[in-house]
Image 1 (cartoon, rainbow over the protein chains, first blue to last red):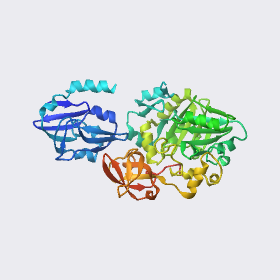
Image 2: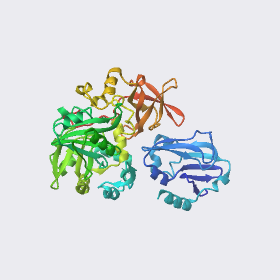
Image 3: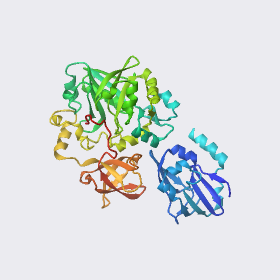
Length: 126
Length: 368
C-alpha cells in the first residue's frame, strides 16, 4: 500500500495499484462541524482532477467535495449517506467517500504528503 | 470599526468557543460539544445563550408615551399591564419590517429588545419619530442572557429564587448579588425559558453559577437550528424591509383593535388584511435528506418559479431537513407539492405547518 496523499481542498487519497480511495480529512471535519448530509458521485461516472465529486453539509453550510485525481468511480460508501455523522467519527478510515480507477498516476505528484498537509492545514486555519 | 466583545467573552474562550463576527460583535458560533449536541442539550435540559449583542432600549418620560409609541408599533400598548411583553414590529411606510422586537411595559415606560444588526438604526428611527420628546437609553452597560429548556426554571430558581412563578411573556425585577436584574419568561427556541438583563460586571459570575447548576453554554449555531425548528423568524433572513408582517404569516401579532388605527405602515397592512397578500411565509419539508438553504429557488410542478427559501437547515430534534420561505399565496396550502432547486436538481418537498418542533411552554400556565 502506498502512502496517503492530501489535497489543498482537504481530501485524502490512498492509492493501491490503479485503485484510489478518497475521503475528507479529520481537519476538514473539524472545520465543518457536525456533518448531516453527504452526496456522492454516481458509480460508473467519470470525475476530473479538481472537479466536484460530492457534497457534505453541516448544520451551518454546504461544501463541495473535490476529487484530487481523475478517474472512473468504481465504488461509493453508502454508509456515510445513510449516517453522515460517521464522517465526523472516522473520517480517514471507515468513512471514505468513493473509490476511483485512476487514469494517470502522475496526477498524484502535485499532492502533499502528511507532513506537508499538516503544515498547510495549520497555516490556512490560523 | 473594531469588533466588539460582550462581557462574557472570557467565558466563551474558557469553554472552547469557536468565535465569529456577528453584527459587529465577536460571538460564539459553537462550543466544544458542537451544534447538534448543544441543540439537543437545550431541548432535554437547558442552554445558556449570550445575547448581549441585542439592543436593550429603555424609553421613559411623559404621559403621552404610550399613545406616541402606538403611532409607531402595531401593538396594543394601552392594554399592556406592567411587566407584560408583546412581540411587535418596527415598520416602514410600505409596511415592510425594519425590525422585529419584544416590547415590555416597565414601571416608568417601556423596554424594547432589538436585533443586534438593527439596534442603532432602530434607536435613531424611534427617537426621531418621538420628536426627541422622551428619554431613550440604549443601555450597553447591561448584558442579556437567555436560559432555555425544560430545566431552565429549576436551574434559574436555584440562582435567583422565585423566578419560576413568572408567566410566559411576563417579566419582573429580581435581585442578584444585591443588584437589580430584570427577568422575562420568553425566548427563541420553542422551549420554556427566560431572558435575564443583568449588569455587565455581574454577567460572568451569574453565568458560571448557571453552569454549576447543570446548564451549558450554547452557541449561535444551535440558536439558529432551535429557532428554525420552532418556526421562528430570523430578521435579515426571513424578515426584511420588503416583507410585511402579514406576508410573514405573523398577523397574530397585530391585534384586531389596532387594524383600523394609525401607525407606521398601517395603510398597507389594512389593505393586505382586506385584499390578502401575494406571497406568504410557509414551512417546507423536503421529501429527501437534501438541505435547502436560504435563497434556494422554489418551483411548482410546471417548472414555474413560485418563491424562495429564506432559512433552511437540518433539524437535529426532528432529524430531518427543514426550511421556511415565501411562496406565491396560491401554493401556500399545507401539503402542496413543490420543488426546490438544489445544485441544479429539483428536489421534491411539501408545504407544511409550522413549527416543525412542538412547543414546550410552561404547562398549566397561560400561553400566547
